[in-house]
Length: 109
Image: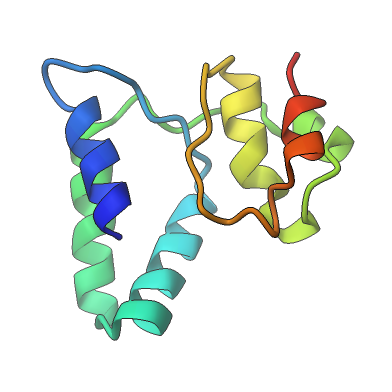
């Protein structure tokens, strides 16, 4: 999660980027914090609350039509649909298994 923390800090004032995400991102964050880092649900909720407080405009609406057309991993399509729907310039991930390069490059609107 060090990379996520760094990216969130870069999005804070003065913003070098703005993070787009879906509500489902918090499910992923909670699961990742518990499974990979042994964090408690309370710690995960604290991070979620902080992300929502500092980035109130980050949730992306109307991403579902994009998710239906994507070719990356089914369970992670919402994660790619948010940056596609918001016309983000980049997607940063180490999860190359669920975000193969051809799927990501073909998703550009």
